[in-house]
Length: 312
Length: 297
Image 1 (cartoon, one colour):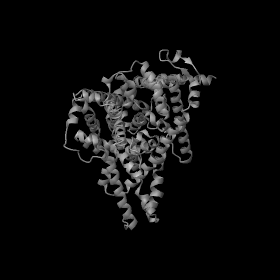
Image 2: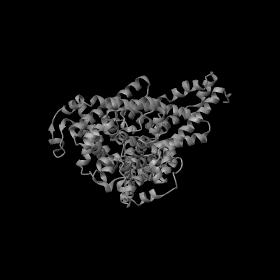
Image 3: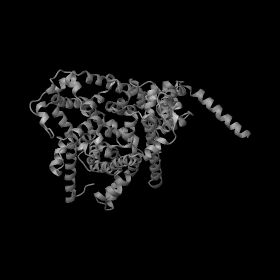
Image 4: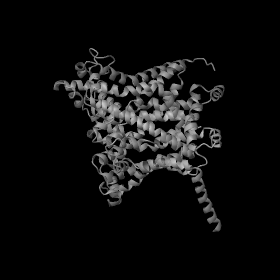
C-alpha cells in the first residue's frame, strides 16, 4: 500500500514538474484542445440527442428522452433497406471498379518510357480533381439533359428515350460511377505511381535474369512491392464505405430518382437540416458513424492479421 | 537492360500510348467545351447539342461582361477569398503548433494529446450534432460558421508531427543551451525547417476551401451576402436559376433564357480558372503531400 501511494505521489509530482518545465507548451496547447473539444468532442456528446425528442429551444439536457425510438423508426421504416442498398452499391462499385482501375492506370503510366509524355498525361489527368464538385455536377447535368451530348449518343447507340438521364433511376449508379472515375482516376493513381517508382530496379533485374517476362515482373515484383500501399488505401476506403460521395449525390439527385440515389447521408441531410427532425436524423447519423468506425477497425484488424500492414 | 522488342511488346506500347492520349482528351474535352461555349453566340447555343470544339458563330465576350458586372458574383469572389485566406492562414498556424506539441519527447501531454486528436479521425459526431454546436455558439449565418469548424484536421496534424520528428534534435538542443524560450525555438528555428510540409498543407486547404460549398449551404441559409462563389454557381448550374444575374443586367424577358445559358458557361470558367492556373505549379507539392501521408516505409 505504501508503495502504491508513493508511486502515485511520484506520478503527481512529475506532472507538476512537467507543468513547470513546459509551461509554454501547456499554454499553446490550450487553444488546440479547446478547438477539438468544441468542434469534435461536443458534437460527439451531442449525439445524445439521437435518444431524445430533441428541440433546439430546450437543448440537450431538457429535451424529452425517447430511448431507442428513432433507431426503431429508422430500421423498421419503409426506406431503410433501400437506403442501405443504395449506400452499399454506390460505394462498393467504387471499391470494386474505380479503385483497381487507379492501380492499373498507375501500372500503365509506369510503362510509358517517354518522360515528357508521361508528365503531360499525369498533369492532365489530375486536372478534373481540382474542378469543384458543383461544376462537375453542373457538367454532368448538362451532358445528361434531354438535349445533352451523352443522352444523344446513348439515344443513337442504344435507342434510349431523349429525356434527361438524371430522371431515370436505372442510370444513376452508372452516371455516378463514371463521373467519379473521370474526376478521380488520375489523382487517386498518384500514390501508386509514387510507390511503383520506389520499387528497386535490382529486383526487376534479378527477375529478368530468372527469365521473367514483362508481365511476369509486374505480377511477381511490382505488385508485391506496392502491396502495403494498396492495403493501406484499401483500409482507408473501407472506413469511409458509408460516407459515399454524398455532396455529389446531393447536387445530382432529385425526387424522381430517390429509389436509387438516396443514400443514408443524404437522408440525414434532408430530414435533419431541411425538415428539422433533429433527433431522428442524429440517430441515423450515429448509426452511420458507428458502422463506419467498426468497418475501419475490422479491415485494419484483417489486414494486420493477413497482410501484415495496418494504419492504426 | 536492353531487350529485343517483341511483336506483342510493340502492340502493347502502341495501345498504351493510344489509351493515354484518349484518356487525356476525355479529361480535357468537357472543360474545353465549356470554354468554347462561353464565347459562343447565345442564339446558336440554345439549339445546339454536342460538344463544341470551337466557338459557335461569332466569338463574343458578352457573357463575361455580364458575369463580371454582376454584384453576386463579385461578392461571391470576395467572400471566397476571405474564407480561403482566413482558413489557410489561421488553420496552418494552429496545425503547425499542434504538430509541434504532439512531437515533443519531453512533454508529458504529448501522448495523451496525440490520442485525443487521433480519435477524431476514427469517430465523429456527424452532421446534425455539429450543426447544433455551431448553432448553439450563435455562429449560424455568420462568417465564423464557415471558417471556425474547418480550421484543423487530425490528418494534417499527423503529417506535421512526422515532419517535426524527422528534424534532428541538435537544432533545438543548441538553442536550449542558449536559454531560448520554446516558443522562440519553434518560430525562429523549427518552423522554417518544416516549411515544405506547411506549404503542402496550405495548398490542400486553399483548394478545398475554394471548392467548398456544403458547409456554407447549411450554415448560411439566410445570408446571401456572405455566400462563397460556389453557392452562386450552384444556384445557376444546379438549381438552374440564372434569372437573378441576367435580369439584373436589364435584358428583355425573351432574352433571359438564352443569355442565362451563356452566363452559366462563363461562370464556370470564371470560377475554375484561378485553381486551374495555379495547379500545374502546385503539382510537385501535392505529390509530396500525398506520398507523405500514404506510402509506408
